[in-house]
Length: 498
Image 1 (spheres, helix red, strand yellow):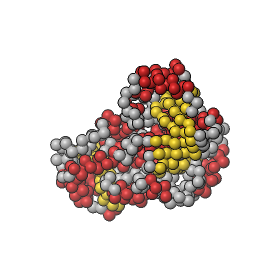
Image 2 (cartoon, one colour):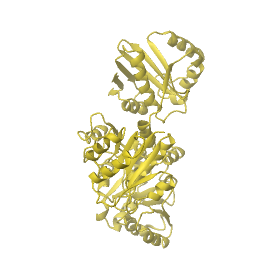
Image 3 (tube, one colour):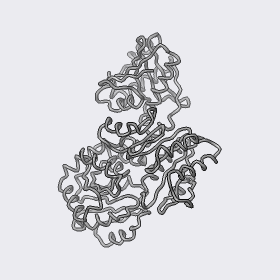
Image 4 (cartoon, one colour):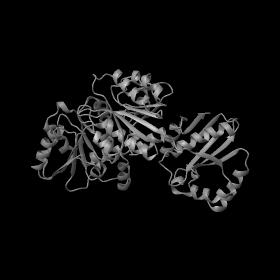
């Protein structure tokens, strides 16, 4: 079993976001067959009971000595030195740990992944995830220039947001154009994170009182919220207001609301995934660089830092959006383009890529290849989208098997076909075409198939030095696939040196 260790903390002061997003990642890694262990500090609001409820082992760092990054590194190293197997990955999600900490742990793990949002310190890692929005891709890449090793792979943007898979499922069930304007009595969600130490929930609830009972309100607090009893008492006396503590399925609740008021952090991507327009106030300094670019580019309404707000600010913002259904519809549509809820699957595929084998197509594959090629999801972005007849396919397939300048390969996982690669060879360059077997989309097979194909070519066709791929303008998924696989884009042509 692959061993993975996660170093993250939660507390009333730190918040719960770091540990919760690592928990989402850990659950998916466990489904892929890995064993995941957490290393945490026992701080007020540490959420150890949540990890225990999900059956994840936790090793607690001793609180005896004053905490410093150097002391943390030494204590974490002692834990890793005591285990029989070197972890395949050490995943670090902590704003106060940097390159010095990672260098101390480097010999004790095969590879290191860092989850960061701030780009304010250097790292020594193999993979870095920043799931926040920072404008275009070049701008996001520039933030980490000089802060990570040249060989470090960057996973940047909300398409890698670590969301519970239930959000992607709810999104699929709702369809691509969910209606956020048609309800006679709009429903509002109020949620400022798992801890909310400044009780922004209470301040916002006080502000929207005059809008009741024309507005239904769902108020959510975390189990670590020190003001949860006060908030509960406030809700009890208000018409149309329901109180929730430690919601297990936030996706189900978000799917029912028309507008949300809350903080930044991971909850921003949950709202984006389901197309819920939102009003945001920053309750921590690290949420400001998240909210500002989103507001600047029209994804949400940002009120500023929570400490500077009064209840009337929330009332005016909510009332304005309720009177502006066109604005809410615009934000909902725009937000859904940012995060699709499948980020955790993409990240896991980088950590534990599918193990694929390639083989040349043979005569017995003819009928299967025809069915896969004619599937609607594969014809949609083909340069020849029409349905291919059996006779046309038979003639084409015979030419493929006989051609000396073409390789037709089938990728398999544990003997089960997952996709098809075709290479048309021309000297030192090969044109690559790829499609997946129906039912295998969205599971990381595309990138794994391209990687396996490049390795296969280096061994079987060493004369090939360059790959070229051509993509239709509307095929955004293919553009992202070739970019993630290390191809360099030139308009709609992607190239890779082998």
